[in-house]
Length: 241
Figure 1: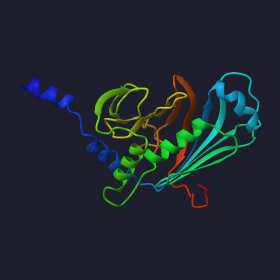
Figure 2: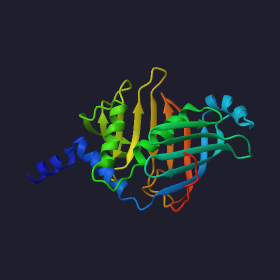
Figure 3: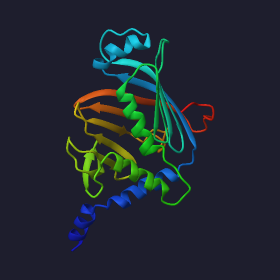
Figure 4: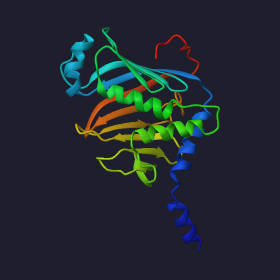
């Protein structure tokens, strides 16, 4: 009997409403209102060829290494700036409550990263149910079928998978142990986008943000953002989102 009960516990899958409610509660309990991080960005060679000259920096082979700044004001305002470590122009994408703004050279992978980061992690509200509703609206806009919930694995961890996990469908993954966003998959005729949030164990960021954000297109890694330091008391009132 004990073995049967254990098996039932291990195979129990929460309904999507409960999963998203736990994710939302996690966001609402954050003790910060603004976060600024400093780190590095690695741009894939296939994109570096065009991006490097647009930024006014040199590149010969391999990944293009850039400085990366992520700024978040809760709720719903995010900005990422990429610039050469030796000086040059800056590629900026900002997202404010559903509206995107870009400055400098275009990098589609950066636009995708900012949108999914802001829509799934930069959520916070003191009103009961508002954060969950905002997340539900975002997933609905992506056409994620939240009626489908399954267990899966990502980066060695167990995740809840919301949606049909196929290349032609959108889906959303949540780490089962901490109820933090793990992955957003977006179908696209030119190659599916796959935004991955990796490692929330950094002492610098904790639950605020993952240590690494990766943006894949098809089977190719386009962009990797790595956080090296974070300030949870950043004054971002004058930052243009």
